[in-house]
Image (cartoon, rainbow, N blue to C red):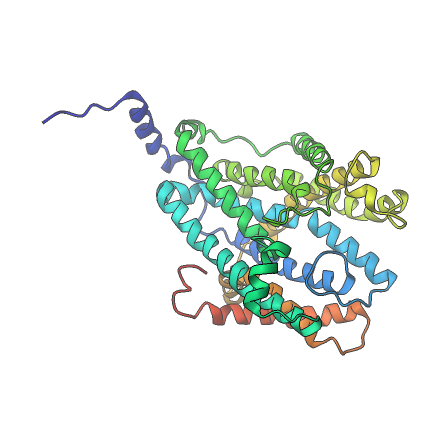
Length: 402
């Protein structure tokens, strides 16, 4: 019987594996303030898309169509602020748990888990449930003589792409996770330095990082303006420099334990910057001529496009730091309600598109100011989404996926 010798690379890999325990963040298994950030972002996604319905400031299957100037202006302000950070922060928070999951499970189990948790809901919603939802709306409010199978195979994928609607985020997270697993597979040596904790980035470093994201976004928008969607995947590449950057930040933050080491002074400074950037939105829009024509802000060789990229990037990072700071200091606890919301937040994200659309359609005959209808719809839709989520998660075989 031959004695198997271990080659130097394998020895190195074995040695690296021993360091995995040492580089785990020194935090509890569940970080409550991070769970609460997920809840906040999920509710914000629901409210954001309700505002799109009532202010017309974005793409959605249904718009109320009764927007006045104040509603349109406030709606655009609200959705622009949200869009500057909420999906980027979602990716950062999601990425924060990726390295630990990979460490515990290894490549095969990690990818299997990602396919189950992300891939199955993505396929079921985008290829089964959303087509039914869209077809119901088209036949109810349009003139469509095609049967569902005819429309599904001849028009749906051509008009809406392989992935459509809010679940583009799930698709992006699945792709990013697979790329991370591939990177880990071929760079096992990186863990040798992962336990060397660095201080939380200084304010100057954060500002330079924001500037680099803004420049990358400006360059991408020369070819892919902010309103252009790559339909097969439902991606708006204009925002992907920030998404990619913040996903990487989430991976690094896990190893460096940054989310629980955010300095008080840093949090306060970027909270002030966030407030100033939000207040800067009206003068930027007015001075840039967006009231007459917002096209130069979307992309291209326009100073407005560069200004929009800078505003979005700096506000986005400022809001990410501010939200983490506020939740870490003020909302690092959960009661029974918080645990319920945390368990159901993922499913709420998956199902909120048809739920809030049908809530808006149910109220179509009610004559109220759009902002009042938006507020009332939010009061109905948010509990309804969480209630339906709780019922769905009680169905057989859903506990492994949802």
